[in-house]
Image (cartoon, rainbow, N blue to C red):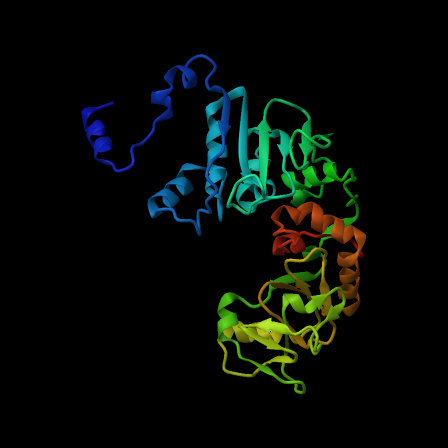
Length: 367
Protein backbone atom coordinates (compact mmCIF):
# COMPACT_ATOMS: atom_id res chain seq x y z
CA UNK A 1 0.00 0.00 0.00
CA UNK A 2 1.51 3.38 -1.01
CA UNK A 3 2.27 6.03 1.59
CA UNK A 4 -0.17 8.40 -0.10
CA UNK A 5 -2.96 5.81 0.11
CA UNK A 6 -2.15 5.13 3.77
CA UNK A 7 -2.38 8.85 4.44
CA UNK A 8 -5.82 9.09 2.82
CA UNK A 9 -7.10 6.08 4.79
CA UNK A 10 -5.79 7.52 8.04
CA UNK A 11 -7.74 10.71 7.44
CA UNK A 12 -11.07 8.94 6.89
CA UNK A 13 -13.64 8.90 9.70
CA UNK A 14 -14.65 5.38 8.62
CA UNK A 15 -11.70 3.07 8.07
CA UNK A 16 -11.96 0.98 4.88
CA UNK A 17 -11.66 -2.77 5.28
CA UNK A 18 -9.96 -4.52 2.37
CA UNK A 19 -10.84 -8.21 2.54
CA UNK A 20 -8.12 -9.37 0.15
CA UNK A 21 -5.45 -7.53 2.16
CA UNK A 22 -6.72 -8.70 5.54
CA UNK A 23 -7.29 -12.34 4.47
CA UNK A 24 -4.82 -12.78 1.62
CA UNK A 25 -4.15 -16.45 2.33
CA UNK A 26 -7.86 -17.27 2.44
CA UNK A 27 -9.13 -15.27 -0.52
CA UNK A 28 -6.21 -15.18 -2.95
CA UNK A 29 -4.48 -18.47 -2.15
CA UNK A 30 -5.60 -21.90 -1.02
CA UNK A 31 -9.33 -22.42 -1.82
CA UNK A 32 -10.05 -18.87 -2.94
CA UNK A 33 -12.57 -18.13 -0.20
CA UNK A 34 -13.88 -18.98 3.26
CA UNK A 35 -15.22 -22.42 4.11
CA UNK A 36 -18.07 -20.96 6.19
CA UNK A 37 -19.51 -17.52 6.99
CA UNK A 38 -22.08 -16.94 9.76
CA UNK A 39 -23.98 -13.67 10.13
CA UNK A 40 -26.78 -11.91 11.99
CA UNK A 41 -26.59 -8.51 10.27
CA UNK A 42 -28.52 -5.38 11.29
CA UNK A 43 -32.03 -4.98 9.86
CA UNK A 44 -32.19 -1.40 8.55
CA UNK A 45 -34.17 -0.23 5.53
CA UNK A 46 -31.74 1.61 3.27
CA UNK A 47 -34.31 4.20 2.17
CA UNK A 48 -36.14 4.96 5.41
CA UNK A 49 -33.44 3.87 7.86
CA UNK A 50 -31.05 6.10 9.75
CA UNK A 51 -28.09 5.67 7.39
CA UNK A 52 -25.77 8.35 6.06
CA UNK A 53 -25.91 9.39 2.41
CA UNK A 54 -22.40 8.04 2.04
CA UNK A 55 -23.41 4.54 3.18
CA UNK A 56 -26.53 4.56 1.00
CA UNK A 57 -24.54 5.69 -2.03
CA UNK A 58 -21.76 3.18 -1.33
CA UNK A 59 -23.95 0.07 -1.09
CA UNK A 60 -25.90 1.12 -4.19
CA UNK A 61 -22.72 1.26 -6.29
CA UNK A 62 -20.82 -1.52 -4.55
CA UNK A 63 -23.36 -4.36 -4.93
CA UNK A 64 -24.81 -5.43 -8.27
CA UNK A 65 -27.60 -7.87 -7.37
CA UNK A 66 -29.54 -5.78 -4.84
CA UNK A 67 -31.57 -2.69 -5.63
CA UNK A 68 -34.56 -0.54 -4.69
CA UNK A 69 -35.93 -0.41 -1.15
CA UNK A 70 -33.45 -2.94 0.21
CA UNK A 71 -32.75 -3.81 3.82
CA UNK A 72 -29.12 -3.29 4.83
CA UNK A 73 -28.93 -6.96 5.84
CA UNK A 74 -29.34 -8.04 2.19
CA UNK A 75 -25.96 -6.56 1.31
CA UNK A 76 -24.31 -8.78 3.92
CA UNK A 77 -25.72 -11.79 2.07
CA UNK A 78 -24.22 -10.68 -1.25
CA UNK A 79 -20.89 -9.95 0.46
CA UNK A 80 -20.89 -13.42 2.03
CA UNK A 81 -21.60 -14.93 -1.39
CA UNK A 82 -18.51 -13.15 -2.73
CA UNK A 83 -16.26 -14.31 0.11
CA UNK A 84 -16.99 -18.06 0.25
CA UNK A 85 -15.32 -20.49 -2.12
CA UNK A 86 -17.33 -22.59 -4.57
CA UNK A 87 -18.01 -25.34 -2.02
CA UNK A 88 -18.35 -23.08 1.02
CA UNK A 89 -21.43 -22.46 3.15
CA UNK A 90 -23.30 -19.48 4.58
CA UNK A 91 -25.52 -19.30 7.64
CA UNK A 92 -27.37 -16.01 7.96
CA UNK A 93 -30.44 -14.46 9.65
CA UNK A 94 -32.52 -12.08 7.50
CA UNK A 95 -36.01 -10.55 7.68
CA UNK A 96 -38.64 -13.01 6.47
CA UNK A 97 -39.55 -10.62 3.64
CA UNK A 98 -36.19 -11.46 2.05
CA UNK A 99 -37.80 -14.62 0.67
CA UNK A 100 -39.87 -12.62 -1.82
CA UNK A 101 -38.69 -8.98 -1.65
CA UNK A 102 -38.22 -7.34 -5.04
CA UNK A 103 -34.89 -5.87 -3.88
CA UNK A 104 -33.41 -9.41 -3.70
CA UNK A 105 -35.00 -10.78 -6.87
CA UNK A 106 -31.86 -10.56 -9.01
CA UNK A 107 -29.83 -12.30 -6.32
CA UNK A 108 -32.38 -15.11 -5.95
CA UNK A 109 -32.52 -15.89 -9.69
CA UNK A 110 -28.80 -15.48 -10.57
CA UNK A 111 -27.63 -19.04 -11.41
CA UNK A 112 -24.04 -18.42 -10.31
CA UNK A 113 -24.97 -17.31 -6.78
CA UNK A 114 -25.51 -19.74 -3.87
CA UNK A 115 -28.98 -21.09 -3.18
CA UNK A 116 -30.48 -22.06 0.19
CA UNK A 117 -30.36 -25.66 1.34
CA UNK A 118 -32.29 -24.85 4.56
CA UNK A 119 -34.84 -22.17 5.47
CA UNK A 120 -36.29 -21.89 8.95
CA UNK A 121 -38.92 -19.18 9.51
CA UNK A 122 -41.27 -19.39 12.49
CA UNK A 123 -44.62 -17.67 12.09
CA UNK A 124 -44.02 -15.29 15.02
CA UNK A 125 -41.73 -12.41 15.96
CA UNK A 126 -40.46 -13.44 19.41
CA UNK A 127 -36.80 -14.08 18.66
CA UNK A 128 -35.54 -10.51 19.06
CA UNK A 129 -36.73 -8.44 22.02
CA UNK A 130 -38.29 -5.14 20.99
CA UNK A 131 -38.31 -6.03 17.28
CA UNK A 132 -41.74 -6.97 15.93
CA UNK A 133 -40.39 -8.68 12.84
CA UNK A 134 -40.52 -12.22 11.52
CA UNK A 135 -37.15 -13.63 10.54
CA UNK A 136 -35.76 -16.31 8.28
CA UNK A 137 -32.68 -18.37 9.05
CA UNK A 138 -30.87 -19.56 5.92
CA UNK A 139 -28.14 -22.08 5.26
CA UNK A 140 -26.57 -21.89 1.82
CA UNK A 141 -24.55 -24.95 0.84
CA UNK A 142 -23.96 -27.37 -2.01
CA UNK A 143 -27.19 -29.36 -2.03
CA UNK A 144 -29.86 -30.35 -4.55
CA UNK A 145 -32.57 -30.29 -1.90
CA UNK A 146 -34.07 -27.69 0.43
CA UNK A 147 -35.28 -28.37 3.99
CA UNK A 148 -37.89 -26.00 5.45
CA UNK A 149 -39.71 -25.52 8.76
CA UNK A 150 -41.95 -22.92 10.38
CA UNK A 151 -42.10 -24.59 13.84
CA UNK A 152 -42.06 -22.25 16.85
CA UNK A 153 -38.54 -23.48 17.55
CA UNK A 154 -36.16 -25.12 15.06
CA UNK A 155 -35.78 -28.11 17.38
CA UNK A 156 -39.53 -28.81 17.43
CA UNK A 157 -42.08 -29.60 14.76
CA UNK A 158 -41.68 -31.14 11.33
CA UNK A 159 -39.15 -30.39 8.63
CA UNK A 160 -40.22 -30.72 5.00
CA UNK A 161 -37.97 -31.43 2.05
CA UNK A 162 -38.32 -29.92 -1.41
CA UNK A 163 -36.07 -28.46 -4.12
CA UNK A 164 -35.49 -25.21 -6.01
CA UNK A 165 -36.67 -26.52 -9.36
CA UNK A 166 -38.69 -23.89 -11.25
CA UNK A 167 -39.48 -26.11 -14.27
CA UNK A 168 -43.26 -26.08 -13.76
CA UNK A 169 -43.48 -22.53 -12.41
CA UNK A 170 -45.25 -19.52 -13.85
CA UNK A 171 -42.25 -17.57 -15.16
CA UNK A 172 -42.95 -14.19 -13.46
CA UNK A 173 -42.82 -16.00 -10.09
CA UNK A 174 -39.34 -17.52 -10.62
CA UNK A 175 -36.96 -16.91 -7.76
CA UNK A 176 -39.65 -16.53 -5.10
CA UNK A 177 -38.17 -18.52 -2.21
CA UNK A 178 -41.27 -17.84 -0.12
CA UNK A 179 -43.44 -19.69 -2.65
CA UNK A 180 -41.18 -22.75 -2.49
CA UNK A 181 -41.22 -22.54 1.31
CA UNK A 182 -45.03 -22.12 1.43
CA UNK A 183 -45.86 -24.99 -0.95
CA UNK A 184 -43.55 -27.32 0.99
CA UNK A 185 -44.89 -26.32 4.41
CA UNK A 186 -48.51 -26.73 3.30
CA UNK A 187 -47.73 -29.83 1.22
CA UNK A 188 -49.54 -28.43 -1.78
CA UNK A 189 -48.77 -28.77 -5.46
CA UNK A 190 -47.99 -25.86 -7.72
CA UNK A 191 -51.14 -25.26 -9.82
CA UNK A 192 -50.83 -25.87 -13.54
CA UNK A 193 -50.65 -22.68 -15.59
CA UNK A 194 -50.80 -24.29 -19.02
CA UNK A 195 -53.05 -22.25 -21.34
CA UNK A 196 -52.67 -19.21 -19.08
CA UNK A 197 -51.49 -15.70 -19.85
CA UNK A 198 -50.78 -12.67 -17.70
CA UNK A 199 -53.88 -10.51 -17.31
CA UNK A 200 -52.01 -7.61 -18.93
CA UNK A 201 -51.71 -9.79 -22.05
CA UNK A 202 -55.48 -10.31 -22.08
CA UNK A 203 -56.64 -6.70 -22.28
CA UNK A 204 -56.47 -5.76 -18.59
CA UNK A 205 -54.54 -2.89 -17.08
CA UNK A 206 -53.71 -2.30 -13.41
CA UNK A 207 -53.53 1.13 -11.77
CA UNK A 208 -52.88 2.20 -8.20
CA UNK A 209 -55.61 4.01 -6.26
CA UNK A 210 -55.01 7.46 -4.83
CA UNK A 211 -51.39 8.43 -4.18
CA UNK A 212 -50.27 10.12 -0.97
CA UNK A 213 -50.33 13.44 -2.84
CA UNK A 214 -53.89 12.76 -4.06
CA UNK A 215 -54.90 11.91 -0.49
CA UNK A 216 -54.03 15.39 0.75
CA UNK A 217 -55.37 17.27 -2.29
CA UNK A 218 -58.71 15.58 -2.77
CA UNK A 219 -61.91 16.97 -1.21
CA UNK A 220 -64.39 14.55 0.33
CA UNK A 221 -67.83 15.30 1.74
CA UNK A 222 -70.58 13.31 3.42
CA UNK A 223 -73.21 13.19 0.66
CA UNK A 224 -75.80 10.46 0.15
CA UNK A 225 -77.25 11.72 -3.14
CA UNK A 226 -75.30 13.02 -6.10
CA UNK A 227 -73.44 12.15 -9.28
CA UNK A 228 -69.93 12.58 -7.88
CA UNK A 229 -67.66 9.57 -7.52
CA UNK A 230 -68.06 7.59 -4.32
CA UNK A 231 -64.84 7.13 -2.38
CA UNK A 232 -64.09 3.58 -1.24
CA UNK A 233 -61.23 2.68 1.10
CA UNK A 234 -59.49 -0.66 1.43
CA UNK A 235 -61.40 -1.27 4.65
CA UNK A 236 -64.65 -0.58 2.82
CA UNK A 237 -64.29 -3.64 0.60
CA UNK A 238 -65.35 -7.24 1.13
CA UNK A 239 -65.45 -9.87 -1.62
CA UNK A 240 -68.03 -8.62 -4.15
CA UNK A 241 -69.29 -6.06 -1.64
CA UNK A 242 -68.86 -2.39 -0.76
CA UNK A 243 -69.56 -0.94 2.67
CA UNK A 244 -70.33 2.47 1.19
CA UNK A 245 -73.50 3.73 2.90
CA UNK A 246 -73.29 1.16 5.73
CA UNK A 247 -73.99 2.85 9.07
CA UNK A 248 -72.25 0.14 11.11
CA UNK A 249 -69.14 0.06 8.91
CA UNK A 250 -68.13 3.64 8.24
CA UNK A 251 -65.01 4.40 6.23
CA UNK A 252 -62.15 6.42 7.62
CA UNK A 253 -60.48 8.97 5.37
CA UNK A 254 -58.08 11.71 6.43
CA UNK A 255 -59.00 11.43 10.14
CA UNK A 256 -62.78 11.57 9.52
CA UNK A 257 -65.39 8.81 9.42
CA UNK A 258 -67.86 8.73 6.54
CA UNK A 259 -70.96 6.75 5.74
CA UNK A 260 -71.47 8.36 2.30
CA UNK A 261 -68.06 9.74 1.22
CA UNK A 262 -68.13 11.47 -2.16
CA UNK A 263 -65.33 13.25 -3.99
CA UNK A 264 -66.33 16.87 -4.46
CA UNK A 265 -65.67 18.40 -7.88
CA UNK A 266 -62.75 20.85 -7.83
CA UNK A 267 -60.00 22.09 -10.10
CA UNK A 268 -57.61 19.24 -9.38
CA UNK A 269 -54.19 18.74 -10.94
CA UNK A 270 -54.00 17.11 -14.34
CA UNK A 271 -52.85 13.70 -13.09
CA UNK A 272 -55.54 13.44 -10.42
CA UNK A 273 -58.20 14.70 -12.82
CA UNK A 274 -57.28 11.99 -15.33
CA UNK A 275 -57.45 9.39 -12.59
CA UNK A 276 -60.94 10.52 -11.55
CA UNK A 277 -62.16 10.51 -15.16
CA UNK A 278 -60.78 7.01 -15.68
CA UNK A 279 -62.63 5.80 -12.58
CA UNK A 280 -65.94 6.46 -14.28
CA UNK A 281 -65.32 3.28 -16.27
CA UNK A 282 -66.24 -0.30 -15.17
CA UNK A 283 -63.50 -1.78 -13.00
CA UNK A 284 -62.39 -4.01 -10.16
CA UNK A 285 -61.16 -2.36 -6.95
CA UNK A 286 -58.78 -4.57 -4.96
CA UNK A 287 -58.25 -4.12 -1.22
CA UNK A 288 -54.88 -4.12 0.53
CA UNK A 289 -53.76 -5.77 3.79
CA UNK A 290 -56.30 -8.58 3.83
CA UNK A 291 -56.33 -12.24 4.85
CA UNK A 292 -57.89 -13.32 1.55
CA UNK A 293 -58.34 -11.64 -1.82
CA UNK A 294 -61.05 -8.95 -1.55
CA UNK A 295 -62.31 -7.40 -4.77
CA UNK A 296 -65.29 -5.14 -5.42
CA UNK A 297 -66.75 -5.14 -8.94
CA UNK A 298 -67.77 -1.59 -9.84
CA UNK A 299 -69.71 -2.37 -13.01
CA UNK A 300 -71.07 1.15 -13.49
CA UNK A 301 -68.00 3.27 -12.73
CA UNK A 302 -69.37 4.93 -9.61
CA UNK A 303 -66.37 4.55 -7.26
CA UNK A 304 -62.83 5.81 -6.80
CA UNK A 305 -60.42 3.60 -4.84
CA UNK A 306 -58.58 5.37 -2.04
CA UNK A 307 -54.93 4.86 -1.08
CA UNK A 308 -53.87 1.25 -0.46
CA UNK A 309 -56.09 -0.06 -3.27
CA UNK A 310 -55.40 -1.33 -6.79
CA UNK A 311 -57.78 -0.88 -9.71
CA UNK A 312 -58.15 -3.19 -12.71
CA UNK A 313 -59.72 -2.01 -15.98
CA UNK A 314 -60.33 -3.78 -19.28
CA UNK A 315 -59.22 -1.93 -22.40
CA UNK A 316 -62.66 -2.48 -23.98
CA UNK A 317 -64.57 -2.06 -20.70
CA UNK A 318 -65.66 -5.66 -21.19
CA UNK A 319 -68.03 -6.40 -18.31
CA UNK A 320 -67.96 -10.17 -18.84
CA UNK A 321 -64.16 -10.29 -18.77
CA UNK A 322 -64.02 -8.14 -15.63
CA UNK A 323 -66.57 -10.39 -13.97
CA UNK A 324 -64.62 -13.50 -15.00
CA UNK A 325 -61.40 -12.09 -13.54
CA UNK A 326 -63.19 -11.10 -10.32
CA UNK A 327 -64.51 -14.65 -9.90
CA UNK A 328 -61.08 -16.22 -10.47
CA UNK A 329 -59.33 -13.81 -8.06
CA UNK A 330 -61.83 -14.84 -5.37
CA UNK A 331 -61.53 -18.55 -6.17
CA UNK A 332 -59.48 -21.14 -4.28
CA UNK A 333 -56.90 -20.88 -7.10
CA UNK A 334 -56.67 -17.09 -6.74
CA UNK A 335 -56.31 -17.24 -2.97
CA UNK A 336 -53.76 -20.05 -3.15
CA UNK A 337 -51.51 -17.88 -5.36
CA UNK A 338 -52.18 -14.86 -3.14
CA UNK A 339 -50.81 -16.72 -0.10
CA UNK A 340 -48.08 -18.65 -1.91
CA UNK A 341 -46.60 -15.60 -3.65
CA UNK A 342 -47.30 -12.70 -1.28
CA UNK A 343 -47.66 -13.96 2.29
CA UNK A 344 -43.96 -13.30 2.91
CA UNK A 345 -44.92 -9.61 3.32
CA UNK A 346 -47.76 -10.24 5.79
CA UNK A 347 -48.16 -7.76 8.64
CA UNK A 348 -49.35 -10.05 11.43
CA UNK A 349 -52.02 -11.98 9.50
CA UNK A 350 -52.81 -9.43 6.77
CA UNK A 351 -51.11 -9.67 3.38
CA UNK A 352 -50.15 -6.63 1.33
CA UNK A 353 -51.48 -6.81 -2.23
CA UNK A 354 -48.82 -5.91 -4.80
CA UNK A 355 -49.45 -4.33 -8.19
CA UNK A 356 -46.89 -6.61 -9.86
CA UNK A 357 -48.71 -9.70 -8.54
CA UNK A 358 -51.93 -8.55 -10.21
CA UNK A 359 -50.18 -7.61 -13.47
CA UNK A 360 -48.49 -11.02 -13.63
CA UNK A 361 -51.50 -13.01 -12.41
CA UNK A 362 -51.87 -16.17 -14.57
CA UNK A 363 -55.39 -16.09 -16.00
CA UNK A 364 -56.76 -18.94 -18.15
CA UNK A 365 -56.61 -17.78 -21.75
CA UNK A 366 -60.10 -17.18 -23.05
CA UNK A 367 -59.25 -16.45 -26.67
